[in-house]
Length: 279
Image 1 (tube, rainbow, N blue to C red):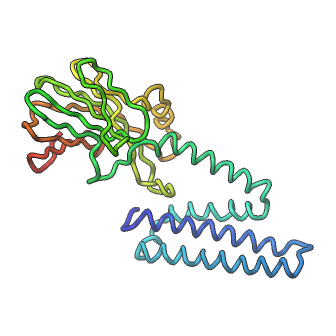
Image 2 (image 1 turned 90 degrees about the horizontal axis):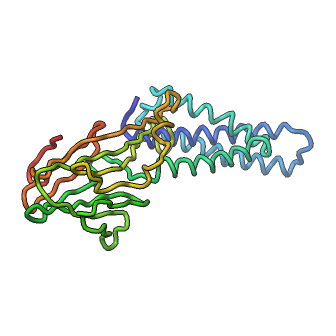
Image 3 (image 1 turned 45 degrees about the vertical axis):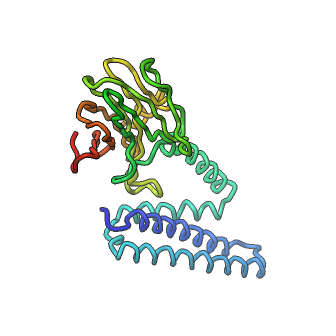
């Protein structure tokens, strides 16, 4: 179930689950033997501070979702799983907390490699590629490739250029109007219940060719194991799509441009000279 401000309410609920676990862990520590009155008072103060943050996060989740979060049982189940994990982390820092911190660091590295390094796909956002018709049979192709290595391979195209102030773009030219551009891309998305990144999608154009000749390729997609990893049944709500399509260059009038997006698992072409989208 999704509702207005779903991602914000989801993350606030998860924060509430984490803080509830921390509060429970500190409460359990109070029952240990040998704790001095001074130490007990410090822990009581800490418990009230953490629990106040817990109530604030939970209340904010209700307000942001306008109460609809109570009808999303899956989110409460995920938040509930955080409670025993973080309670045990407080009670057993060496056995549980340290491995949890290590696992969190590895998770950040994995997300950076497999997801965050690709451009964010947002409906109505910046196009992944723009094609400009500069003159007779001359087309300039500009890609928002994001950080990473790209390569322009065709000998008939101009050398790749990087516009001033935009190191995340690649630009090259191609000539001729008869043959369309053949494009391939990847799209990776996470289930909405994932914290922070849930419900978002990232992807990129990995290959551009024409008449069997490779004009552009993104080196991040070469020798990648993402497809095999995310295509398995146990991918835990992570989907991997390969997208392919063609762009008819001869349909672009002189002085106009064509923007390329990903929409509904396919290439979406937005012409600048008319309203509407065609594929």
